[in-house]
Structure formats: C-alpha cells, structure tokens
Length: 413
Image (cartoon, rainbow, N blue to C red):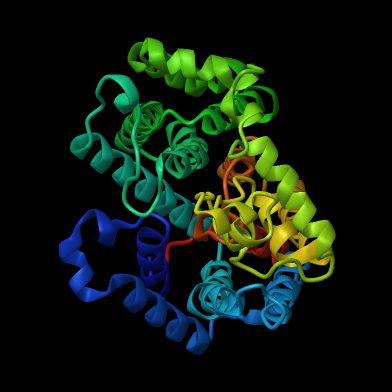
C-alpha cells in the first residue's frame, strides 16, 4: 500500500470509523484533517495514469456534482441559511472532495479490496470498543443509546454495511489466518449489531442475507449460506427476549412509529409536505429539524409554552426531498441508481472478472454492502454521511479499474 492509499485508509478510519473519538488520545493529532489533507495533496500531484481525474468522469460523479451545486443554490432561500451554509462548507464539500480522492486513488482491484478491508476494520474496531465499554441493562437499557458520533441505529446500519465485506474475507481470504480474522470480525459485528437493537438495521440484515444467498455468484450454495448461518447463530445465541419482542413490533399497528406524532410515518408525511410546499429548493440543506420546529402543524404550540420536538427526518429520501426539493431528490436517486450501474458494469467485465475470481466476489460484496446501507438508511437521516459517499467512491473506483483494463489483483503496490 503506497502513501496515498495509506492516507485514504486513515481518512476512512477517522471519517467513517471515528477511531479518533474511540481513542481520544489520537484527537491531539487531528487525524481526520491530517489524513484528508495529505490524501488530497498526494492525489493532486500523483502522475500515475490510472489516478487521473478524467477517469472519474462517469454518471455517478456528474450526478454528485449536480447534487452539490443544487445544495449550494438552496442556501439563500433556506429557512435557516446558517444551517445550510455550515453543512455545505464545513462538511459536505469536504465529503465530495474525498469522494474524488477515494475513487481516484485506486489503480487496480487489489487497491479497492484494500480500502474495502479498511472499511471493515473501522466497523469492527468500532463494534469491539462499543462491546467493551457499554453494558446492557434491564428495562429501557436493554439496547445501546448514544455512542461515539453515531447513535445505536446509525451503528446498526454501519455494522450491516460492513458484514458483506467480512463475508468476502471469509470466502476469498488469501491466507487461512485472514479468513479466520474475517470470521471473527463477522461475529463481532453481529454481536455489536444485536446490542444496537435497531429494527431498521434488522430489516437491512435480512435484505443482505437474501442477496448473499440468492445472488452471490461463483461460490457454491453451501459456502454462501455459511456467512448468514454464522450471523444467525450469533444472533440467536446473544439476542434477549426483549430484543425479539422489539423486532416483533416492526409490523405492529400499535407501534409508536405508526401512532404518535413523533413516529416515523407521521414525520415522513410532514416531510413530504415540506417538499410539496417548497418543491424547487426545499427548506434548505440541514433544515429538516428547523422545519419541524417552525413549519409543522404542531409548531404553533410553542407560543403557548408547549414544547415541540424538532425531529430528524428518519429517512434519507424524505430528508433530501424536504431539504432540497424535488430536483434534489431526483439527483440523489440518480446517485443511488448510478452506483448500482457502476457495480453492475464492473461485474459484466467477464474478461477480467469471471464469476469465480476475487474481483467478481468483491463486486458482489460491495453490492451487498450498498444494499444493506440503503435499506438501513431508509429509516435514518444519512443522506450526507461519509458512509454513503465512501461506499459510492469504492463502487466508482471498482468500475474505473475494470473499465480501464487494469483489473489485475496480483500487482503489488
């Protein structure tokens, strides 16, 4: 792994895995800023042909840049321009820039594999720290609460999105030890996932398991089943009765998400209303909660001294539609769809990615990770998260190296 890839790996560990928050001593070095700046500089001045920015001119990149532009245009008309300005310039521009660096840094399938393993390591370390530092209790303490940066539901989706990469390590590991470590990572992620108690994450896990069993080509069925079977064993062995009781409420008509004004269904309905009231630019990026406190039907209560919850969207599509209007939602959906297309095109390169080879399996693993993240994000506000755009960058990077004919996995960096 060369210095650029090492810097990108550091970026993923900090921006996605939040290792500097897990271990505060690292915060003194400002690793998120340091690794990001170093990676940007190295990529800009790198002369390697496969790292030229022109190779990233694909539909996903175009949609992402259009999405960024639309977000910028929404700032002046936001209900709170300060919120939009901070999100845009303090966070999202850097996220988009690092999308270019992550996707641009890879030269071959082996590089994509390395960065995917860093994503897996970041999730596993996060899960391991959570398991070692947080205990479950009785009553309302049966599941994890707010953790480091993420809450329990965010972490549940993070864990699910990393599990297919652990399965890839088990099935395609280069050495016996690496396969054993991947199996341990899968078990740790599953146990951390159980602790999260996330219902949306559970639905995402089922979706990933179904994809692996039905669509993970090139591996015999009994081996494809082994990963989901390991997850199921850990799940059944560690999940409490209260966990299963909570999962059973997913389809219950009496669940608060269906009945209460702060439940997801009513929040989504209000979010769609914000989009229809402001169809062009929405209420402005980062302003969904402000809309809940100022535009919702319940906002008038505040003048009578009655508190109103400034709820998050709890759905990435509703979040974007409400905050950036119908055009913003269309662009966001285009990013999602074109990422699937990028993975599909990488898989169709049969000359370098036969169904039995490592590159084909990596494509399928990233597709499963993408599905897991999207299903989990349907119940969370993750439209601008580093997880989202890191997975997009890995997919585009894989498309780039397979399209350019540099898909060899055996070249040493």
